[in-house]
Image: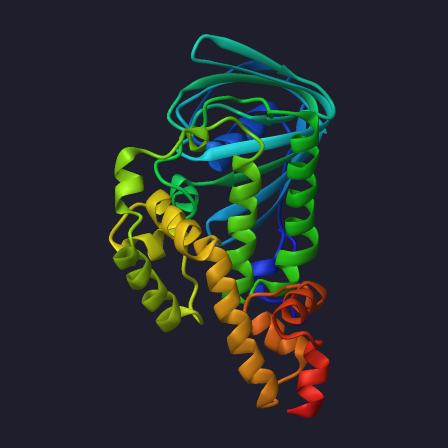
Length: 314
């Protein structure tokens, strides 16, 4: 296992494990992705896994010279991948899926056992549980293992790379930035792979999207803007579903609940700038912005001046 660089936050440590024979490869895959039974493979095998975990999300990079086939129990979590080279195949629910270099994929539904095989894979994997998805949308189930389009797949893979290599290692100790990154990953994944969020609003959702629910949601946001709160938290406070909450905000305020939360946080950042309560970068990160340029754009849209101008005149 690699050690952390001096001064680096522990959450940014990259853990590296190497397996140098087929049995060790089997043990490594079982430890990482759930109990598996080895069906066969090349005895002269090697596999290297470099992992970074940020709360309930884990990013893995796999690479090696190996041929292996396994039967796996249901993973119990969502495991997605991007294959850089080599070949990987999966069989679940009576369907065979073959992947080659450049493919993004869902390995299998979280509640389905599967058979998998790999030949000399170089792959990026990302794993998260249903609880992470539930922060963003109601009762989501993924319904397909292939991206809806090459463009969506490219956007998803680019987002994963940015989060793993650039954003999360730097801001691993900032809960709002990590939370925003987690929801960005989930939202991008939902926009990439077929799932049940494509279904329309129900009659119950439309009925529940009333002003009283909106008032409860707004009060909750005002009281908790400095905390890591999710769309599910807001919906629980409003005592309606996530979809009904989203409809209430769109119907009465023409924005999403998370956009309203962002507006409240920008207002809080404005107060910090006026009080000179830190640098622009520090204040931006305090209110969930990893990139000062994005913070500056949102701030200028709200107040018509840059954050630095407010800080200087505060």
